Length: 138
Length: 138
Image: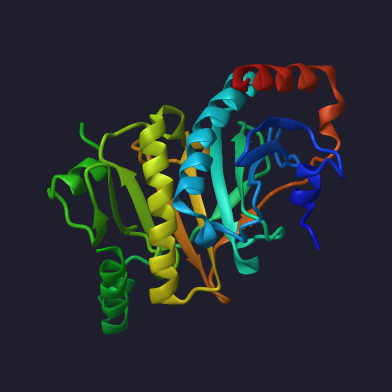
């Protein structure tokens, strides 16, 4: 089954499209968590950030800068959250890569809660995992 | 005053550094909202996403793909949130561009709340703002 975003790309369902090129499409999120809430989705239905080819990732974020600035100019928000969720547990509901641009206002209803677990890294398991990351990136 | 991230880059304060090149540095967020919570910061202290040059934005997100995959391999999380906050109202506390990579687990304490305001776009003010965005991007 094509994702809801593929159906938007194919003009099978309507959306308010703000920008489109060969690699990405950008349109209003139908939920409008705040005024101007926008998505940038890839044309190819990569599942999430883990699967993005490097050139596609580069293209997405370069345009995220441009589109964020255009939203800022038009909606004059107090701030902006740029968010991509990978996996259901992380809040992903459409399994086709997309980046949220969520303008923030003085009186909006968006909230994030992040606990503080400073000090957890001093275990052997943790250290060996961090070494794995460094090895994968070197 | 140099930001806390510039001081990490300059090795004036300690951090667990996972990756570094000429453009970015990636290290554990001291708060460890969840195990493996990592930041990617630019070497140049751009304030936030609005100010990123295109080549820097491309570099950041290409590496976000690689670093996300390395964290996934090492920590085996259920999901991942990729987040950048612009402005205090959006939750930004260090005004030096950074992207959060937040691994998510079945039992973590991270939560996001996004209201649904579907239907708001049918006003004239909204429409004129959307036209501004399209004009800025065309």
